[in-house]
Length: 304
Image 1 (cartoon, rainbow, N blue to C red):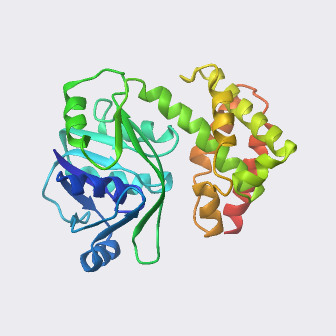
Image 2 (image 1 turned 90 degrees about the vertical axis):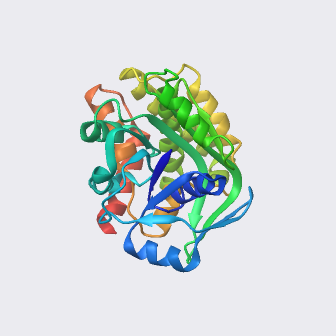
């Protein structure tokens, strides 16, 4: 497959790099500054799963030419509009669009831009960051990418995708329940990012306190109640399962949103917490903890 990775940052650079390392035909769509950096240093991955130094093929949005079979998007939600504009020249009639953004609000925007059939479901579980030299750092072993047709079917194009992903140094899973998996991650990431950002603390000190544990449990119940009210495809025990998952996380684990706040970076508060709060208000679901978190995040954004 002819694969385009939008960006060569912590997520796109990692999974794209693992596909390139395997030998797939991978191109990175990057900004001029990142292109210049990678031309000098190469694409470097330092990981507990194995290091890599690669010489990637790169283009910018001005380099019109190739069309691609697969376009993987892992930008933040606030960069999605620009990413859509950037990739338009590289999309053909049967191009597959695979988004790895958190939440679900981006699907509607991508479907409007490229059509119902083009957009499949996707998510990832990975903790990566870029250091000051642009090297991708991964210190925890989880590096999972999950994808699938939103209809749940295993279509011929998913079989092609599976063949492209198989053998890469990453866990790439073809799912027949991608919609549910996306909503479950949405619930998880909204709770974890919200509570750690609100408390300005890693998860461990929060869960040490009975009041902290109670707050996390109540937040998960709020989010689950909203999703059930709008008939999201979550299963009945997911809030309890995610409470256990959060309880078992490393003591010093921080959410990416909390790290973004510490670096004075933009946030995805409207894409994650804000969208659920809108649904809560529409359906009269009480959400005092979610409202508190959202208020905290919006004050940060206003003062940034």
